[in-house]
Structure formats: C-alpha cells, structure tokens
Length: 223
Image 1 (cartoon, rainbow, N blue to C red):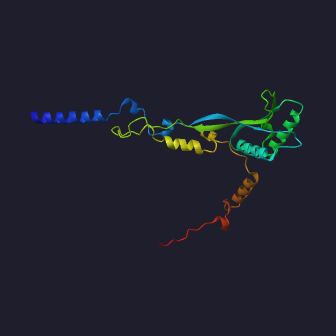
Image 2: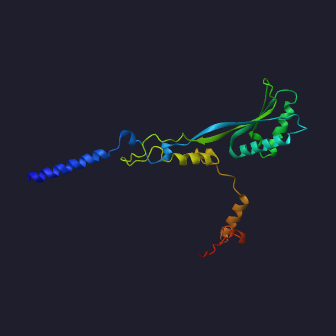
C-alpha cells in the first residue's frame, strides 16, 4: 500500500507540474484572437483642399484647372463630410468669383445649402481660389513582430496576428464613416412601392422579372 500511495503521489505531482508549465504569463493572458481588439482601426477627420488659378468669371477656368476642379468635387461627393467651402481673395471681383464657383458647384450636383463662401486677405501673393472640405481616413498602427515566433509553448495567437488584414480593410474601405455608424436610409421610391403593393394585392409575384440578358448558364467543360 505504501508503494501504491507513493506512485499516486508522484503521478499527481507530475500532473501539477505539467499544468504549471502550460499556464500563460500575465502578458500572454492579455492577448485575444480578435484582431479588432489587438489592432483597432482608427477613423479620423482629414482636411482636403485645392487652390485654382482664376482670372475672371467671364473667362472661366482653364482646361487643366477645370479637370482638377471636377476631380475634387467628385471626391467630395463620394467621401466628403459636411459643407464644401469657397474662399476667394478679397477685393472688387470677390462677389463675382464666389458666384461663379457657387454656380459651378451647384451644376456639379452639390446642394446649395452645403456650399459655404468667404474671402481672405492676400498677404502671401497667392491670389488663387481655394476649395476645401473635411473627409475621414481610416488607419491602424504599424505592424511588426515584437516577440519570438518560434516560441509556441503558450499556444496563443501572436501579437501581430490579424494586423495585415486590418491594414487592408482600412486601405480598401470606400467611406471610413461606415466603420463609425451605418449610413442613413435613402429616399423611398414611391412609384415602385405603389407597383409592388398593387401586385401583391392581386396575388401576383412581386419580384422583379429578368430578361434573357440577365440570365447566365454554366457550360459543361470536358477534360
């Protein structure tokens, strides 16, 4: 019996020792397999601006400046937040310049209540017209290995786990504001709503029909 008790005690000691070796350290215990926690994406405002050479309202913008204007406005319509501002040099032609750019923005599809205007004193010799707005950018902290990847005794995720994926998401997302809050619902289509309700009341299918151009088939490929 004494020998049996000694063997049981030795076995128990071995189990306890093995368990103590597998226990994670305090630093390892703080790691989780969730990259969103270890490598969060930060969304921050970013000011965008452009300055355009402009002589007179009756002359308009030069072709290359018109291209820059159109690209800037398209970027604002895609990712801009809040208003877009027009700042022109103070002077007798300021009002005409403001009117020109305001009308051009409205013609490009910018709502008039989102256009802000103002003047500035030219002290640096730069008499160009400035357009600006605020957008949002998404980014994460830089990735990098800070621990020994060959040390796998803890069987926990590495500190850098998921960092590259988070970087890719931040770089590829069209509008970083979508990471902060969902977009508001767009306006309803009253005509389509009336059509669907009328079809439903008649007991007919309400799904949109597809024509032959919208159908696809999978061909058999023989090896």
